[in-house]
Image (cartoon, rainbow, N blue to C red; front, top):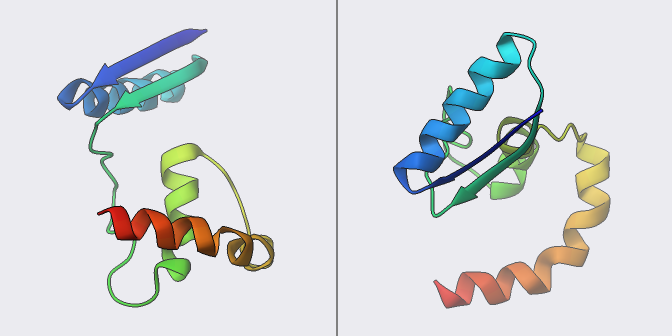
Length: 89
């Protein structure tokens, strides 16, 4: 299996390379990104609450398939941490 790591623009390129490898039937066991922009085929969230876009974000960036019920159950637990992180930026 391939292990890819990219920093800045290299991370963006690593995402594209990983995608191409998987299309060819290859396995990517690690995709590490350091301070990188993640290209998305479409905007993850246009207008509205960030919670609406979370399933698409997880699916497109991490390959995690979650449904709305799964997120609705876990997001309240994350609210305090998210509020702290938001305050830092």
